[in-house]
Length: 456
Image (cartoon, rainbow, N blue to C red; front, side, top):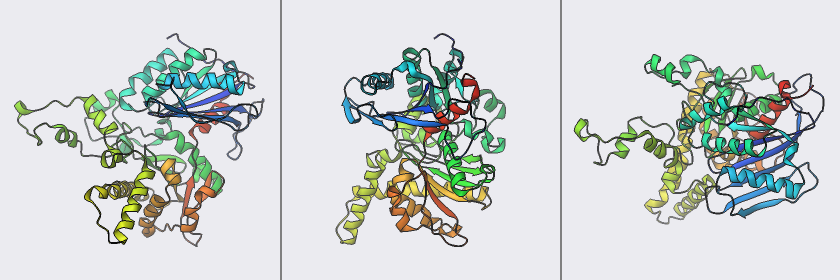
C-alpha cells in the first residue's frame, strides 16, 4: 500500500462517515453548511448537513440487508432492507453502497473528498490520523485487541483507498476520548515494565459516542461543557459505562479491550481471569499438575469471550428486544399461576444479569464523581429503546436521588430531538436523560472543523 499524505480539499466537496460494526456497516454522507472556514466552533449549530444514510446489516449471512434513505438530497431512489446477494463482507458492502449512490442518487464518488472511518482501537493514537502506510499498519497491529471491529474497519479502509484514491481516508478512534483517564485508573496491577513495553493498560471505547453525548447533554443542560458531570450508559450489543467529570472521561468500564466491563450480545464482560481455563479444561476441572495441563490459545480464549458469551450464550439470541419480550411473557404466565419451564427462566436471567452489572458500575462511578452528578444518560440501541431496562435501572438508583417519570419513559420514541427528559421534575431530583447518539455525525463534525483538512 503506497504512503498517502493529507490533501487539503475544496469545501464544496462531500464528507462520508463510515462506521463498521462486527457484521454491519453504517454510512452517512454530509456536505458542509458553509464554504468559508468557521471562525469558532459552536455547540448549538452543526457545521455539516446530512444528505443521506445507508445501513447494511447481517453482512456475514448469505443475504445481507441493504437500506438507503435520503434526508436532504432531493433526487434518488430509497431502499428499505433489500436483500443483496453480492454482499459477503465489509468491502463488498462498501462497494455496493458506492454503486448504488451513483446509480440511484446521481452522486459520483469523485465528489467525496474525505472519508471518516470509526476505528475502535487506536492504541496511543489520540488524534484523528490520515491513513498512510504507517497508520494502517499501526491499526492492523491492534486488531487482536478489538477483534470484532478493527478488522472490519480495516477491510472498509482498504476498499475505500482502492475505490476513492483521491479522497483522504481519516481514522477517528473510539479510544481518543479516554486519553484523560489518570494513570492510576488506567493501570493494571501487573509488572509495570512489561505493561509499558506492551501497552497493557485501560484504553476505553465508545469514545465517539461519548463525545457526541457530552456535547449534546451540555447544550440540553445549558451548562459549560467543561463543568458537566454525567454518568453515561452506552447500552447496545456492545455496552459500556463512562463517568465524565468536568467534561472529560474519568473512568470507563471497558479496558485494554472491549471484552471487559459490561456483558454484551456476545461478549462476556468482567469475568475472573481464571474462568477461561476452567471453562475450556477437557477434564471438567482444573488441575495444577503441569503434566495434565491443557493449552488454551489466545485465539481460542478471544473467540469464547468475544463471540460465544454474553446474552446470546444464555438465551440463544443477540436480540435484547426479544429477551425482554420473552421475559414479560413468562412473567404473565407466572401471574396466571401457569407452570414456568426451567428453560424459560433464561430470559429473566439475561435481563437481570445485565441490569445488575450496569448497577455495579453506576454505583462505583457515582462514588468516583463524589455524588456530583448532573444527570444519568441512557444511550445506544438498548439504552434508547428499552423502556423496561431504563425503568429497572433507575428504580435501583432511587437511593441516589434519581427518579423516573414512567409516562415520559414510555413515550421516548414519540419525542423529537437529541436529548429527551425521562426523570421526575422535582426539587432536588437529579436528571435522567435519553440521548440519541450519532457517531457518524461526530466524525463529520470534527472533520469539518479541522482547518488542515480544507483549502483556504
